[in-house]
Length: 76
Image 1 (cartoon, helix red, strand yellow):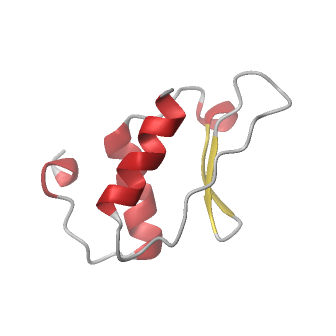
Image 2: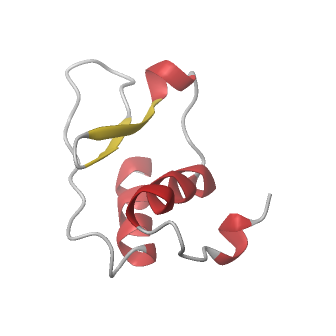
């Protein structure tokens, strides 16, 4: 459920920057990887935690539209 919600948040936030978001079931439980054009931006296994939506939005923004203002998601 969380992955679907985060996918919807990405599509809503980046309407002009993302053509699609794909969710793929994992063969290994607990896997969560976010990539753009084949480049891994976040891996739960490597980071050791599930990402917050703010963190994901910043990572995706930095890749697809670095000048985009994320409003409250940009505040530290």
